[in-house]
Structure formats: structure tokens, C-alpha cells
Length: 73
Image 1 (spheres, rainbow, N blue to C red):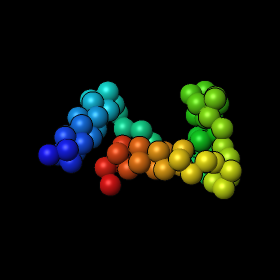
Image 2 (spheres, rainbow, N blue to C red):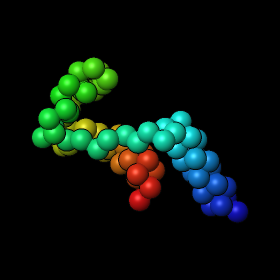
Image 3 (cartoon, rainbow, N blue to C red):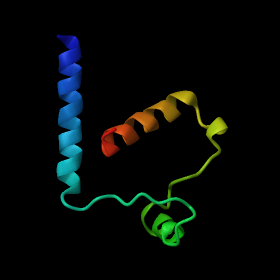
Image 4 (tube, rainbow, N blue to C red):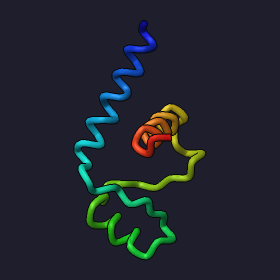
């Protein structure tokens, strides 16, 4: 029963995020993309890149789970 509640909560969060996005989808970009640095400067100015071995494992796992939730994999 607890597992189902967790799954239900996960689905509700996913649905809410998708509703907020609407028809617009977030582009997947890497530093190799031409518009990446401009988008980074204008929209994500506080975003900081670090080598993965300097990011705490707990934070890395949280970001990985959020990415999976947003992408739907």
C-alpha cells in the first residue's frame, strides 16, 4: 500500500511538471551546442558546472532521479 502511495505521488508530481511545461518542451543541450552558452548566461546564470567527482553523491542521485522523472525513463 505504501508503495502505491509513493507511485501515485510520483505520477502526480510528473503530471504537475508536464502541465507547467505545457506544449513547450525543454531542449536538451550540451556545451557543444551553439546556443548552450547564451542560454546558460540568460536563463541559468547561477548554474555551476563541476566535475562529477566533486558533486556529493546524494545530490548527484537526486538530480539523476529528477532527470528521469522529467524525461520519463
